[in-house]
Length: 129
Image (cartoon, rainbow, N blue to C red):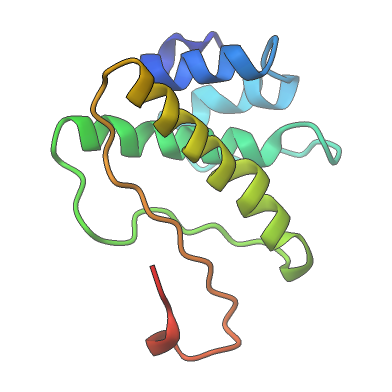
Protein backbone atom coordinates (compact mmCIF):
# COMPACT_ATOMS: atom_id res chain seq x y z
CA UNK A 1 0.00 0.00 0.00
CA UNK A 2 1.28 3.44 -0.80
CA UNK A 3 0.86 6.38 1.53
CA UNK A 4 -1.84 7.83 -0.73
CA UNK A 5 -4.57 6.42 1.50
CA UNK A 6 -3.44 8.76 4.27
CA UNK A 7 -4.18 12.46 4.74
CA UNK A 8 -1.41 14.41 2.95
CA UNK A 9 0.09 15.74 6.21
CA UNK A 10 0.26 12.22 7.67
CA UNK A 11 1.84 10.87 4.46
CA UNK A 12 4.35 13.73 4.36
CA UNK A 13 5.37 13.17 7.98
CA UNK A 14 5.84 9.45 7.40
CA UNK A 15 7.90 10.01 4.24
CA UNK A 16 10.14 12.46 6.12
CA UNK A 17 10.69 10.03 9.00
CA UNK A 18 11.03 6.70 7.19
CA UNK A 19 12.21 5.68 3.76
CA UNK A 20 9.46 3.12 3.13
CA UNK A 21 6.79 1.33 5.16
CA UNK A 22 7.77 -1.94 6.77
CA UNK A 23 6.17 -5.13 5.52
CA UNK A 24 3.88 -5.17 8.58
CA UNK A 25 2.72 -1.64 7.80
CA UNK A 26 2.38 -2.17 4.06
CA UNK A 27 0.30 -5.31 4.54
CA UNK A 28 -1.67 -4.12 7.58
CA UNK A 29 -2.69 -0.61 6.55
CA UNK A 30 -5.26 -1.48 3.86
CA UNK A 31 -7.24 -3.61 6.30
CA UNK A 32 -6.91 -1.13 9.16
CA UNK A 33 -7.89 1.85 6.99
CA UNK A 34 -10.97 -0.06 5.80
CA UNK A 35 -11.97 -0.51 9.45
CA UNK A 36 -11.62 -4.28 9.44
CA UNK A 37 -10.39 -6.23 12.45
CA UNK A 38 -6.70 -6.73 11.78
CA UNK A 39 -4.07 -8.92 13.39
CA UNK A 40 -0.46 -8.18 12.52
CA UNK A 41 1.89 -10.93 13.64
CA UNK A 42 5.46 -9.76 13.15
CA UNK A 43 8.66 -9.49 15.16
CA UNK A 44 9.36 -6.75 17.69
CA UNK A 45 10.51 -3.59 15.92
CA UNK A 46 8.61 -4.31 12.72
CA UNK A 47 6.33 -1.26 12.98
CA UNK A 48 3.14 -2.97 14.17
CA UNK A 49 2.27 -0.37 16.80
CA UNK A 50 2.97 2.59 14.51
CA UNK A 51 0.86 0.90 11.83
CA UNK A 52 -2.15 0.91 14.15
CA UNK A 53 -1.54 4.35 15.64
CA UNK A 54 -0.87 6.05 12.30
CA UNK A 55 -4.06 4.71 10.77
CA UNK A 56 -5.97 5.88 13.85
CA UNK A 57 -4.33 9.32 13.77
CA UNK A 58 -5.20 9.60 10.09
CA UNK A 59 -8.87 8.96 10.81
CA UNK A 60 -8.86 11.51 13.65
CA UNK A 61 -7.09 14.15 11.56
CA UNK A 62 -9.54 13.66 8.68
CA UNK A 63 -12.56 13.93 10.97
CA UNK A 64 -11.05 16.92 12.75
CA UNK A 65 -10.38 18.82 9.55
CA UNK A 66 -13.96 18.14 8.50
CA UNK A 67 -15.13 19.36 11.94
CA UNK A 68 -16.69 15.99 12.73
CA UNK A 69 -14.33 15.09 15.58
CA UNK A 70 -16.30 14.93 18.80
CA UNK A 71 -14.91 15.26 22.32
CA UNK A 72 -15.01 11.61 23.32
CA UNK A 73 -12.78 8.57 23.47
CA UNK A 74 -12.26 7.38 19.92
CA UNK A 75 -9.31 4.99 20.11
CA UNK A 76 -8.51 2.45 22.80
CA UNK A 77 -5.11 0.78 22.71
CA UNK A 78 -4.47 -2.23 24.93
CA UNK A 79 -0.87 -3.13 25.70
CA UNK A 80 1.05 -5.03 28.32
CA UNK A 81 1.86 -2.57 31.10
CA UNK A 82 5.60 -3.08 30.63
CA UNK A 83 5.40 -1.80 27.02
CA UNK A 84 2.63 0.78 27.43
CA UNK A 85 4.69 3.87 28.21
CA UNK A 86 7.19 3.26 25.42
CA UNK A 87 4.45 2.40 22.90
CA UNK A 88 2.46 5.53 23.65
CA UNK A 89 5.46 7.88 23.76
CA UNK A 90 7.38 6.59 20.73
CA UNK A 91 4.47 5.59 18.49
CA UNK A 92 1.75 8.07 19.40
CA UNK A 93 2.73 11.18 21.35
CA UNK A 94 5.96 11.89 19.46
CA UNK A 95 4.46 11.36 15.97
CA UNK A 96 1.37 13.36 16.95
CA UNK A 97 3.55 16.27 18.12
CA UNK A 98 5.70 16.13 14.98
CA UNK A 99 2.66 15.94 12.67
CA UNK A 100 1.03 18.86 14.51
CA UNK A 101 4.25 20.91 14.09
CA UNK A 102 4.48 19.99 10.39
CA UNK A 103 0.86 21.01 9.83
CA UNK A 104 1.51 24.32 11.59
CA UNK A 105 4.58 24.99 9.40
CA UNK A 106 2.50 24.14 6.30
CA UNK A 107 -0.21 26.59 7.41
CA UNK A 108 -2.78 23.84 7.85
CA UNK A 109 -5.33 23.67 10.62
CA UNK A 110 -4.88 20.69 12.90
CA UNK A 111 -7.53 19.29 15.22
CA UNK A 112 -7.03 18.93 18.95
CA UNK A 113 -6.18 15.29 19.58
CA UNK A 114 -5.52 14.36 23.18
CA UNK A 115 -3.82 11.28 24.61
CA UNK A 116 -4.69 9.76 27.97
CA UNK A 117 -2.98 6.75 29.51
CA UNK A 118 -5.02 4.67 31.91
CA UNK A 119 -3.44 1.70 33.63
CA UNK A 120 -6.42 0.58 35.66
CA UNK A 121 -4.47 1.01 38.88
CA UNK A 122 -6.37 4.14 39.89
CA UNK A 123 -9.99 5.25 39.78
CA UNK A 124 -11.18 6.98 36.58
CA UNK A 125 -11.88 10.19 38.52
CA UNK A 126 -8.10 10.69 38.72
CA UNK A 127 -7.68 10.68 34.94
CA UNK A 128 -6.30 13.86 33.47
CA UNK A 129 -6.30 14.91 29.84
